[in-house]
Length: 209
Ligand SMILES: C[S@@+](CC[C@H](N)C(=O)[O-])C[C@H]1O[C@@H](n2cnc3c(N)ncnc32)[C@H](O)[C@@H]1O
Image (cartoon, rainbow, N blue to C red; front, side, top):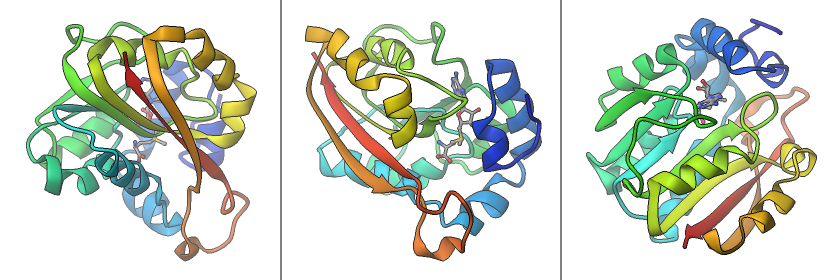
């Protein structure tokens, strides 16, 4: 386990408790030290893809962190975006930005404090990745999104292959439809150098049936 608030530290996490410790230490500096320095593009790419695909509100931001995704979604979906995250410290930063209707702590690998079919859609950036959430996280997300609702999330491309997302999606069978993936770069050109600069993610989208 690492408590090192960095991308390598985050990728090396193994359990939800590891995640809580690392993000408690990272919350206050995440936007400036990670997102800005790395030119982190993924939250905006997910938000733009959700809106372009006609995603509606209310929408749940899964693993919302400090709220970077809502900063792009909000002009269109004002007042109708909820944030959930394992880390209360990350949510505190998001809440202070005044972007979300509701912020609540939870683990997407467990049952959330939400009724079935609560949301018209769900989004997520940077949470389905190494050391964080595997394809099992899709189950709870499908439960809280209503039939016909759009799910659009990023999955780190190496993680997608390593954790068998393809097979898991096939196993969901008739519970989802219209599955698409599109590969994007996680970081922009402003991110300088570093070993992760060319990392990619798949923008995974589907409709809940
Ligand atoms: C790399 S950050 C991404 C945050 C934000 N979405 C972004 O793109 O900046 C990953 C987030 O996932 C959260 N997380 C990790 N495991 C989780 C789980 N099982 N359930 C909910 N959130 C989780 C972490 O607490 C952290 O805030």
